[in-house]
Image 1 (cartoon, rainbow, N blue to C red):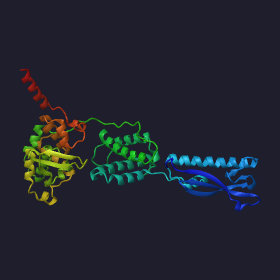
Image 2 (cartoon, rainbow, N blue to C red):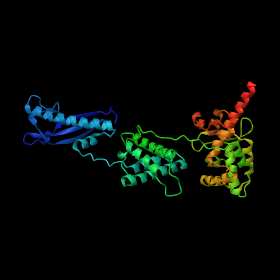
Image 3 (cartoon, rainbow, N blue to C red):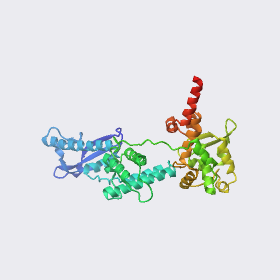
Image 4 (cartoon, helix red, strand yellow):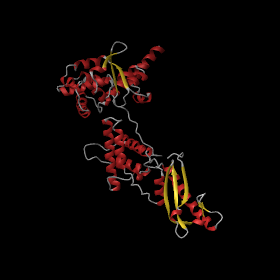
Length: 409
């Protein structure tokens, strides 16, 4: 409640209820122009010691001064409640002040973690993609497992959140052994869950559901890893390999297409014929938006990518969906890529995102395309994001040194 709230206190002797020379004293509250009255329980004042004009005890009598001492205590108590409610942001009116004075304020039920999860998901569903929300659901399931292990409960009060809670949850994630085939989490896997928890906790702080940020002073640990990509020989092995199975050929083609365009799996799956347009150079370009960030993507189509599009122009599955390529789940894609890697003699852990890394390194940066141009084509908003791909390849070092030798003669 803002400090501009008009607030005043006055007292009135109800002389129409006088009995044996004494009458009840009523308290009057005015908040924002609205009046509220209440009787001061178990307190009466003698009419002969009451100053009707000033609304209090007469200062020239001992009993009048005693009345004023009591009324001053009432006034100070009410002002204290008003100040407390103002600082805590509570709703202030005559009724809430009266309840606080009479002790009728009921203690609010503690806010539970499940309430934060529910509110976060309700807000996030309007802003985040289904894929991103799935990651939050996984983190939330891990939190419930943590509650059961540490607190023997499915839910906890938000007031439990503190630095130790975060630290204990981090250790729980590191030590958690999945029941299925999955491997235990590494540092960066744990980091992703902690980042999602931090976003939910930030929401609780913003809502004043918790007083302090439990992440204050907590250092999120990240392990630097090299982004996997295909060099030109490995990419050539994939491009030139013939497969007996149509599904492997199809997945290989879509993977190679992304190696030459830098698109992510979901953005490639979303591509429609209308996203291929004639660019400023009269050549075909991809013009679309990244699903993850809604950032525009404008990428000229290299010849290899154009040939792949042409080969799927009559694909019945793609036509039925209105897309450039048949739609397959990312999970199936990555599963088939493991088979493709084995058949092509590629020893790297091949996932669909490797294609995007390959475009950034082997196709563009290692061939002298400026990092600013690569960043634009990848749909990055910051050059720093693109710099994780800007590795110096041995071939590029060799080419640059060959030019230097020629210059030095």
